[in-house]
Length: 206
Image (cartoon, helix red, strand yellow):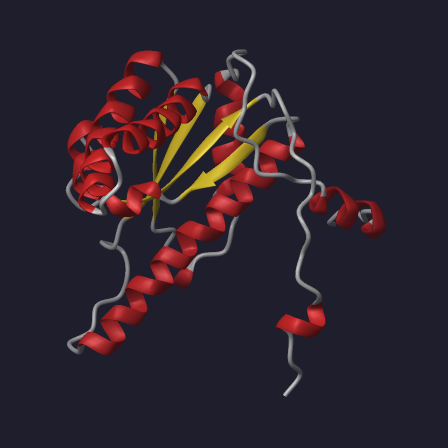
């Protein structure tokens, strides 16, 4: 029997989650990290194949190595886009600090080995999208689980731009494809809510 929850306060609590980018230095206990991941695995997934995989970084050394490697790719791309070296360095430094200062970095990866395969490109592409959607669902669930623990977190898409570097730096299996990072910790600052588009602008009832 699923416990009955006060839906008004539950909706209010869900809406109170924020994307937190500034954290206290306090470490997150290992049992809490494992609880977040375990709760995350109850997210829905395509065919219930659970194509998500995690690499969890908690040491300054591992986070620094990752940030430096990703930063090198980021700097190269910014310079190629025409940014000045000073402006590129500012952005790289800001990105590096966010990774290094987060007590926990969870690298979310997709793994296709258990998904269906098709002879045509159209259906195979759809299967891949289904798997990446599953990874997005578990990421959102982990962020809500973190919120329940009094933690803050933010979704970072940067791994999409540098998957091979991340795979090498973290020694990931070749079939683990980095999709996103979750930066998690006890919040040093919780941002104000940002305006949401009204449903009338984003919803139709055909």
